Length: 249
Image (tube, rainbow, N blue to C red; front, side, top):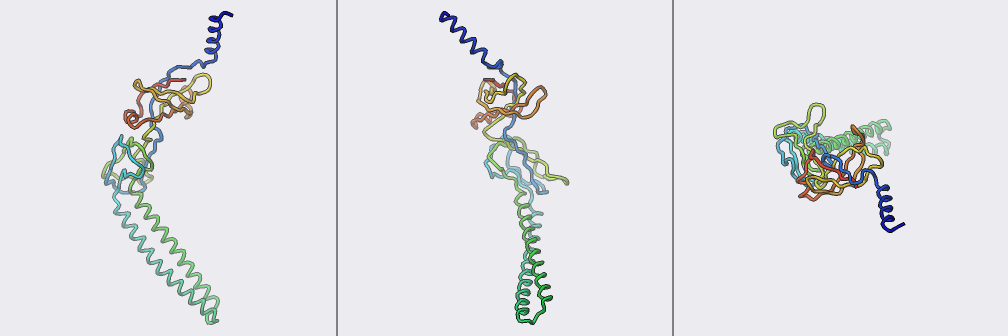
């Protein structure tokens, strides 16, 4: 075989071995990566909203605060009840210890000792319940302030000052937080062969590498999410719903 003919033959074999979709572009839409819907358990009016859509926040940053007045009052009642139970428990313990000494000297009957022991254990249970109630009220008060669980970007705020953040049935999402340094490109795959694991995502003539994974059934094929990691400057220019192209390898 002549050298040129051999070269064309090798190229033909290479092309035959490439996937039919190599280099193809598919339409996609951007979506938030790591989206979280955040709620509050406290049923109280909102007094502060410290963030706006698009703002970057650090883990632990205060996002929304509700009026803590009712929760603080409930906590004060629980702490007062705990103080009473501590006094009653101490009295029951002293009484039981005294009865044990009397029983050891055969001055007290076994039945009387059992009665005092039952009273001491009942006081112990009431004390434990009062402590648990204080802890519960403390957590409810802490949950009256919504803080960022992770670093992220605020993408939606659903409350304003004066609104009550919890309905009579269940808490509703009041804020949505997404990853600050990543976006997903979503498209449907109905091509032949296995789904490509790595692609390029192109938006406004710029492209980023992305890692793909199946995300359930779509209308015409498999729904695919491709995660791309971005610099803060690039992420700030991208928003969910923007059109994109997935460039297959």
